[in-house]
Image (cartoon, rainbow, N blue to C red; front, top):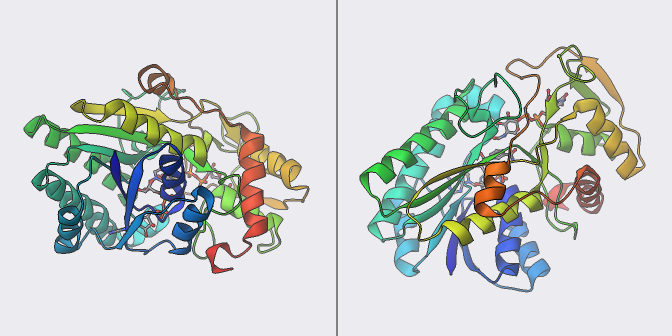
Length: 337
Ligand code: NAD
Ligand code: WQD
């Protein structure tokens, strides 16, 4: 089975490429490298000992993407490509809507033109907005608080409408919770540009001495210790959910939606402690005001993915911190090293 991975040079895409290649799938990667480095592709080849084609192309360039589909016959597409920074999406909403939505519309119409009907799409727990209760199930009400989240929710709607119009499609929507960690080799990992927005890359850069201290955004939430609670999932577990989705759902028309999380919620201070233990380094922090738009707590009920895809997260918080630290130590400046 041959799979096109859009956004395959990025954080989650690169890890998924490794798991696909190790699972015996043939892949090609399409990425415009707007938020990634071609070095990640070399590292995927080092880890797996396998080769694959890379198309440096932008999903906004219809003709370039059409050419890719004319040059190879794909059985399935895993669609990671998109912009993902929440704060930036508030400042540049048109860029986010254009890139994420127009890019996806181009991809879908080209897939249809070439008779490629299987797709796995990267959605996010952000589509649940502020959940009324926990754990979160797939049928909870959906809402968003920023343009990035709105692009995810709109694309989910586009995919549903596409299936209604064309019952050939098999569409799997994976709603990721908070992916962290790295491949155990330390060769691929998350490489944020500039100062990280997300908690774990920030903690990692404090631990290695690149940033002086972590700002903990709020300690008065109604949670176990007052700091925000999230469902952190090892990126390799998340990648394996994509492999399962391709395996179980390709060729089975329908729209399938799954939460991809562990079901465990950890607070910011628990994450700091766990990371200090894994790294043997101190993570200095100070308590700061809440970050606007943040919710108190968020964790998944992932039982639907277990029941229907046969997937569960296997790696624990210790694994996530150890592997994230291993990547950071081996690549203090990410792929720029
Ligand atoms: P990433 O930025 O590391 O990877 C995205 C990749 O897409 C990058 O390599 C980028 O260069 C590429 N890309 C962006 N726009 C493109 C375009 N127009 N044409 C071609 N390539 C393009 O991000 P990631 O963390 O690996 O996330 C992958 C997907 O998962 C994204 O869609 C993201 O929104 C979604 N997601 C991420 C998280 C998270 O916390 N990391 C959580 C939920 C959902
Ligand atoms: C986690 C916790 C913060 C940074 C975001 C997106 C979401 C999804 C995943 C793509 C929260 C706290 C953070 C810091 C802190 N991405 N924190 N100091 O906000 O759950 O989700 O990434 O789809 O859409 O919104 O993740 O890692 O930013 O924050 O105290 O410097 O850590 O308040 O409680 P979040 P995060």
